[in-house]
Image (cartoon, rainbow, N blue to C red):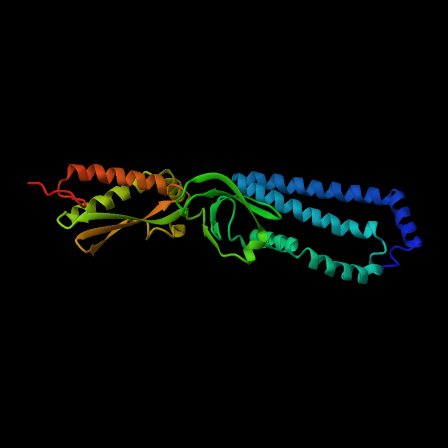
Length: 290
């Protein structure tokens, strides 16, 4: 360390910096790297339409070229870097220890970029917070918070959490590739009700609502037959339970992410309208007719 700050070493460093060669070499390195970055991004943009994927590529390439520039130019500006390897090792160990959380965030970012447990547009749950990923930066990830469970509505708040949580928290993901969540609707009927008719209505209404869902159509257009992992789960089904003097119907179906509340509302409205026109479907407390 004393050798690095010696008058002769500082004098050599100053002469290198003021001689002009370091500046020329630095400018040349940055010019070449910027040209390569522009070329790579232009090729990527011609083949990528998704703006979120474009943003991820742009940031990843920018970070890569920044690190490359530092590695290439460090020996130019610090010619005696080899002689201070011991000092840098000790300093680096202390730096890593002091800024452990910072490096965990950087490591978490690298893990997310490489392993991709979630990407921009996915709906994730981190601890007690659930939301849609809107940005992934070097230090933190930002999500648009939603209320309730996976089918909740947007609260308008943006939540930021450090990328280090990828190593310490359990993260649940609803991937954009699948874009569906499981949902169950419970209907309680009187024991004298025609539960078979009610079950058939629930199934047909849920199937019709799903087929007319914009998100479902978009999902089906993007998937090929060999990628449609949810094909065996999209068909709604109704399970029947006898609970005391009640007949309980459980409608189990898949719903597009972000549309659970609206789709549930439409199913209930359609079912209640149909039940009103069919006296055989009796709810708790309704009087038998005829």
